Length: 83
Image 1 (cartoon, rainbow, N blue to C red):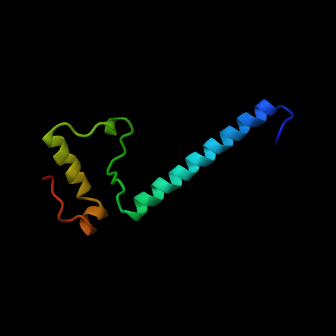
Image 2 (cartoon, helix red, strand yellow):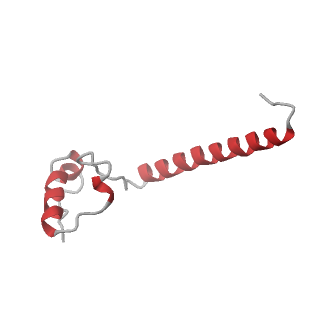
Image 3 (tube, rainbow, N blue to C red):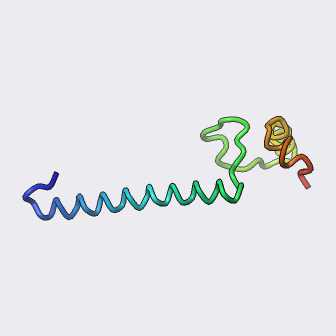
């Protein structure tokens, strides 16, 4: 895997450390999200549309109505309201 070029070896080492750090960070964030039960509830897949939160009360109501249809709301957050 290593070459005779020390500069290239150093770059590969940095790249591998960065990748390992990112993988570790992903695992930590995912684990903490799971342990604290603070995950997001995705009711519809909107890749670019969902970047901004709903800007009107009517849109909030529409999204909340969608949220009410998933098991998380029915089993865990049944007393949640928009207020």
